[in-house]
Image 1: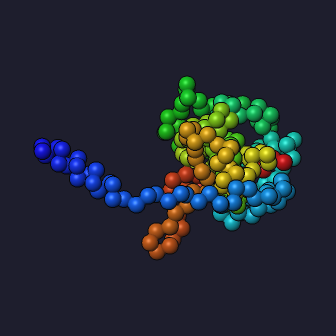
Image 2: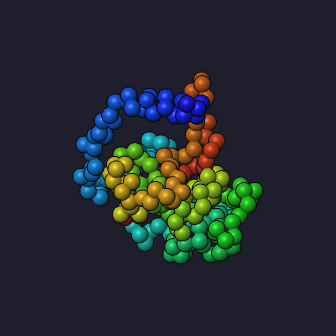
Image 3: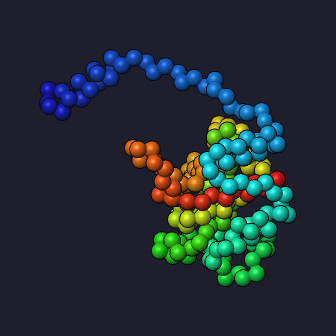
Length: 208
């Protein structure tokens, strides 16, 4: 017997002694049973706890709220598929700089932006998590991580109660970014530092 055959024989013998893999239980909760009003209330509670600023607006008030949040900003970056109605407040179109896969902004240029405005794919009310999936109204992952201020619009119909509900709505092959409040971390002495690996300020507008 060659050395190769001996090694493979030992591996085969070792694998044959392994116990059968037990079935994975699938009896976890798959739905929350919450209505839209309860979902919004729960998501607001979680996001506020994470130190995000949250605003609940009727659809016709979204643009005005965005305008107020970006009033002090110079230029801000937007994805190519952002709804035009959300920018109705902007009397200076040059402030909104489009980033696309065809014409991506450099990291230095993104870092010079005062803010970023995106939509969102799905939000999980129970965990206070907003998910971006790189769709046209959300853009590349970099645009939501480099600028220090992120204004994110959450359509009420995109809110799921719990994670299994949210995952069913997502395409796992897309670049997913999960956001639970502004970027923050703590060192060994538990001193909170914000803005280390993402925006220091997160403003969430829930469009109902």
